[in-house]
Image (cartoon, rainbow, N blue to C red):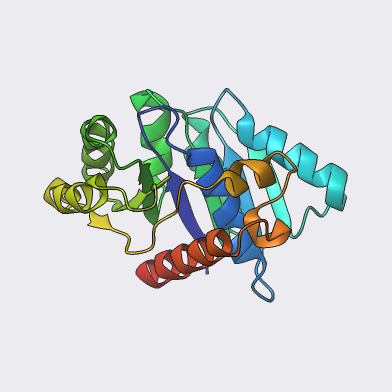
Length: 213
């Protein structure tokens, strides 16, 4: 049976796609016997830089995670190929690109869409949701970089229900630990710079896994 393909997509830049992709990859790779692949189709290559730092720290195995790159239209074929011998394939897509993001969504079992709790970010998210729905993918909005006691969080969560996509109950906070761990080729699950951040990632990974089942 082929593995699950999870595409991380958001047309707005700076939403935290790469951080989300890396943390989900590590969360699922820590489960016994699970093989995870990450596929970077963003020309900026941030996920590739994170993986290289990870290889320097852990060696070629990089914690039971494989890494590949592909162009936009090649992402569908590459993702499906990786899914034949991996349990999870996580695809990091570029912002502001219908052409490159669409094939990755078409191949996906689930499209995770990170969105920060602000009106501007919410408005910019709607085209991404529409594209995912058009491709017949299960789209789930993930509130990311949520400040503590943010006034807009509930308002944004309520507005997100109008988009025709599910919203994850688990949310990722606005924590320095996420960026700090990424700079080390790691994640908060491993550095434990913030127990709360690690708990948030674990909860989100578990919730998304349940949605795919």
